[in-house]
Image (tube, rainbow, N blue to C red):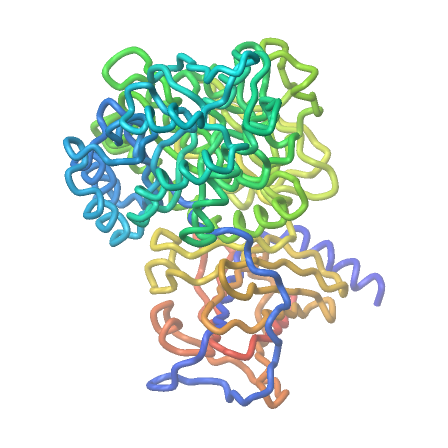
Length: 623
């Protein structure tokens, strides 16, 4: 028997085909459908998982226009263009210049004649609205004189309110240590908060306090770090206090300041950070990645970068097609995917054959498939003062390294525990990857390409449509089904949770994966092999989430002998066969077998809808 079991293990290690199991966890409809008997007893009770710690739109796709082009009409048109090209948008950032004075929080009606209408329009499209802001009030801003007369600004060593020149003029930094100043400042912020905005992009004026050498507030000496923590922390905390915990700010984790790296924000506010402004070049992309690594090492949970670089480059577009695509692909496999800056960022403007558009759309779709994974990984990271990103380079402290001296041996990183990302950092489309030991890794864009952990490989001439990303073999990866998901998206399974695993090694030890969800219970999936040729899968009950289980890595020689589901009365019942994917969607429980493009492979779909959770088992005959 021991030899037989070892033989079975070897067979399953070499398998090449897809077994797709569609399992729903919602309440089954009874009209015109076959259903398994349900009663008040739970087959698999709900998982005792904590809710996600922040809103999922932190992981949506954000877009914005630079301030020289942004107004009500252009911003509404800009987001609508993306939607009309089939690209999902989760948030827009209204860049600087939207107010009548810098940081007086009153919309300029010449540029934004009806801000309330604009915000309502975006919300009707499922798009969140963020406003650019800082803690600097300019001398020519309508609210400056009141604050100055009441001594609400940071002071120098002689007790004078200090006016500081910055990129948008000259002004004073609000003194967060003064309760009266803070109360007044909140009354200014309320002018925008009352419109129902969703958050702020807090730009980096806080380091300007260093120009004073010794800065003082109402309660005495104020260090740069104390001021930064107060600035970003107050925008984050006060907005959530007024509008709810589904509000966010966008601020820097680690960025460069002159020739050093600086940790800007307190960790608790960086749920959707960005690593500052970069040039629209591959060197700029590397600079963004340097800040990824430093931010991750400092324990910031979630961040991304301006796709294509913020700054202006040569030509009408300001950046090359190849750079935009490679940076967008990096964004798709970052916690935050956001695109905006100077000159052109719209993917449909970079060629006449829609290649850039189609690639961009594809990777935005992948990013949305990862939302539940990112929300779970991000919540776990946030809870433990860690990052969603684990750099594979040797840790080099931002305190010890000047920017020009920081040259990591690799920019590769893990996105959560189960996804390996190898950014393309030049036009050469060549990357070298050292696969983490302990597991094998499956190429995202070709599941037959499996690489052993602990090995090193060079990948050349990577097509523009692909990106070197790998997922861990044998572990369930939660993906959200979108309309672009092959077969399932077209068959009406959009919105289902896809649990995908490649070549689960036969083991009697249960292995579990889970997702944490916003404002509700999560879901846990557990799989094991009770015998050498039977795979068991349990999924916890959920009131309104349907799931799809995808088990890849089975050849045709592994003929499905029986597919069974456990009913609430504790009876195993065989699942009937559907003749098509569409029929599968209409009938539960049922299964459908379909041949794959690869010879000697097939795909098995099993569809169940049970409010009480699911316990299923698949037994195979090895030919």
